[in-house]
Image (cartoon, rainbow, N blue to C red):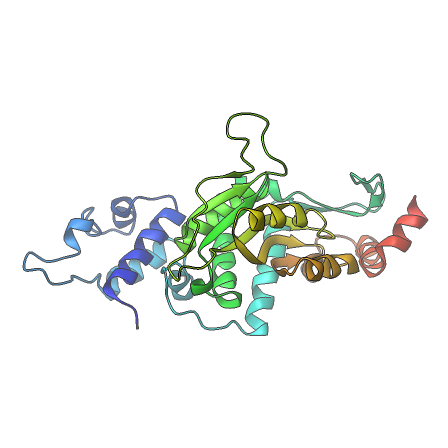
Length: 308
């Protein structure tokens, strides 16, 4: 059962997620422009005024949103645990969006050269996604839903974006969860306050304990870079037990080992395995390419040794 404040907060968050002001969303849904004004949420005699089910239905229709997506946008709303099927659906939706926005690419004839100098038939650029509003909004809604389910909104005080690619995603998700955000640098800047953490990191949460901070990044390969951010946050007084990424390679054993070493539970929207599954199902690439990519995912080191 949701409160009056939660329902209105859900409408405000939905408007923001779709790029509208509350009045702009009302107009887009064919309602009076003042329907969602804050001044109209309480009647003149002090009683709470609720949005009608018809108004909510019109808003969901015009924003192409589902009721579950609307519920995910309600701050402090009770969130049931997602089933394995629902988690897989989220992973597949994310994989499809990443392929269609060309944030992930396959090329076995001319493999990509990674930063390490090694070859790879697959490449991902999560930064590209931020330019595609519809796909980005859908994935960020799913991210908020997943975080609520797997971590719990009551176990989150703040979100921290990792420099630099994690910052926009931290902003999108913190807005949907209605939580404060900060961001953390790879190293302290060399002037001014010499800060490594930007924004305000509260010293204590409402329970007078260290604030629970979730690290947000764009992707994870082996997880080595996460240690820098986690250590900086913990040194500054935060409790950091969870990290969330848009994309997890999901093919390197070192990833799990590195997360266990620093005491982090990793959560992700999708992996290469989901990308391969949806690519094969929708025939995005030819059979030979898919077979080569699968051999890489099964044993990336062996594949790289052969192609190098």
